[in-house]
Image (cartoon, rainbow, N blue to C red; front, top):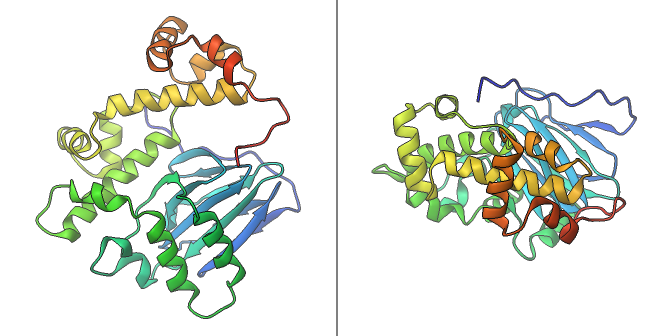
Length: 285
């Protein structure tokens, strides 16, 4: 993967654009709205899709989120998101000095960049948080909500090297930056040197601890991301299979065909026939 510039969203001349507040805030966004988190905030912004879909561009790449998926970015990521037609999303912005985002003795009080899927009941909790946005203590309540959203990270942090919890958290945060960069550039081939620079590790040490923490080598994870990208394009788009293979970072249609069949058990064309959605369908709810 050569050095990749930050992808920039196309120009949108629309009255739907909203600049998020510089401090802690929570906003409900609906279909067609574009939200930008500008400024030099050193905190976090969280993008949660309740219904439909949302596309977010940031320093780490481009992310296509569907219902119940979330994305958590560091404050200097410069994100810009747009909700798809019929979609509903919540965007939470924390100040950098928010103690709930950085302090505490338990893993639940630390936040890390990344993406995932909301657990059952979290969508309703997010709506309740938005409805009480004007009540006192929004910073602490929003921070606690996001920490709860990332509870599964505790086990992963425990696998990181380091004698103290603080050191393990630091290593995990650096690994997550590189992992999120891979997810944001799913259609590209990952080069260890580039990823190591993102995490501020040497290439050798990055490869070693990535496999130790996540259970697979960076190249294996990148290959899985490319196949997931191809699967999404087959289901949601109308690109010919050959163009899907190129858009997913494969060198040739033949190598794509072999890898896709090995991963999903059927050819790409067969998978599309089995799972393609109608052109008017939105994201999963």
